[in-house]
Image (tube, rainbow, N blue to C red):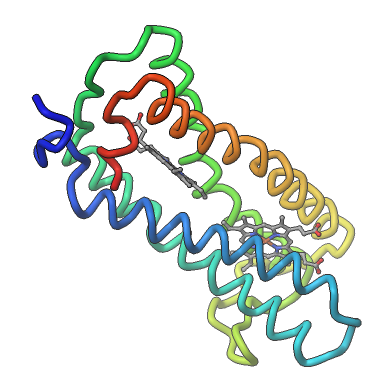
Length: 180
Ligand code: HEM
Ligand code: HEM
């Protein structure tokens, strides 16, 4: 099979999902980092936080359809095949990335709801409150976990990107081309 063989790529829908969700995660990170640069109470800060919610909620909306597409479409083979350890590392990393895409936005929503704050986008509440008795201290603890997971995944995502580049430039296999 030549590396240009179209059938050796991920399905178009899976590729679209991968790059759309990459852009959304990038935006979620970008907005929350820029948000910290503005003083409390300013409209820009409030809007950047709402933009963080919007990007994160879009990730949550897409993750299950993405998993369904992945299960339906399967995975194209890597040519030439990867060593066993690399296959295992890829499986574990992909599993961690899927867990992150699902759990991180849920923790964001739970942070707000347990903290007694509305999940609001630009002044419009978009989710009803599922929590009868808000607990600000607990909300704060969940926010810390959300923030920690966010930090850990800078490294996991960096590892994932380095692996893609390693496959492309060192092993000269079709791993990256399958996702383009
Ligand atoms: C892929 C999705 C998401 C990622 C990668 C992400 C990442 C992060 C990170 C890294 C922080 C910590 C920033 C810091 O400690 O300086 C943070 C804070 C926060 N996130 Fe998310 N988040 C996501 C989705 C969401 C969603 C869907 C919501 C709620 C609808 C949310 C609500 C919050 C809140 C309330 C904070 C605390 C903001 C503050 O300091 O007041 N996040 N997020
Ligand atoms: C937020 C950032 C990213 C996330 C959350 C993410 C997530 C994922 C996930 C979950 C998979 C597994 C797909 C499957 O079910 O088989 C995957 C595969 C892949 N990703 Fe990413 N990705 C990100 C960024 C990137 C970037 C920037 C690149 C390129 C430099 C990249 C290249 C690839 C490649 C080549 C594959 C296929 C790997 C294989 O089949 O072994 N990803 N990504």
